[in-house]
Image (tube, rainbow, N blue to C red):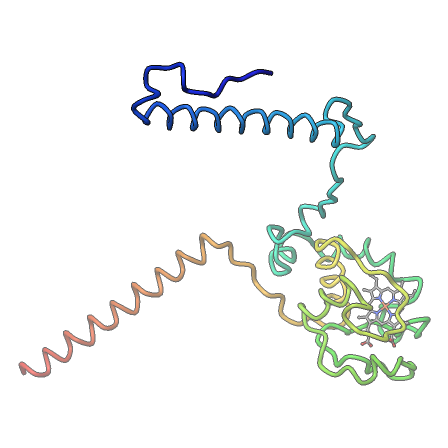
Length: 224
Ligand code: HEC
């Protein structure tokens, strides 16, 4: 490529400004040439002209079940969506190791009659792991939910050889079923968010009314 950068032949040569212009134009051209060269080199280096497509495009991102995500139901909500009868079916997965009827024998795991609300690791005649024997607390709804979700994650060192129930509805149902078998602790009431807001508004209105009544009583007392 020939590029006569000399400005001697142009009339502007004497003014100096033409010189500047030519120098600038030269640099622009030079930059272009360098840029083009680099892009050719880069495309050779990165095989842009011969793309090798991987067999699987992109990464496979495994999403959890919708129910399991943060947008799924809370345990209290799940409890309102299922019944103890649903839980009886789920309990088929537990009955290999647990009996549920009153006075039922301990098996691989302890008898679970009346377990909801009961102290953890306290069924008489059953030999617990030290992890469960020393865990403490009672089997409330949230505790049972977290335990059944991931027994070993919840209680490090437990000997319950059960992977857990991944569905929150299954956990809710089986908890209701256990509750109907000898426990009968109160089931938390699920209040949908919209109703919750309404109830709060009602509560406020009532409180305001009370204040208004009190004030008018006070005014009446002051006047009388
Ligand atoms: C493979 C046998 C096995 C299966 C299946 C199993 N469990 Fe257990 N479970 C155990 C054992 C063993 C323990 C005692 C754990 C320890 O001592 O660490 C236990 C303990 C428990 C406890 C605590 C009892 C207490 O006295 O505090 C609950 C609650 C429980 N299991 C519920 C369930 C439910 C509900 C299921 C079914 C969804 C289930 N288990 C399935 C073996 C099993």
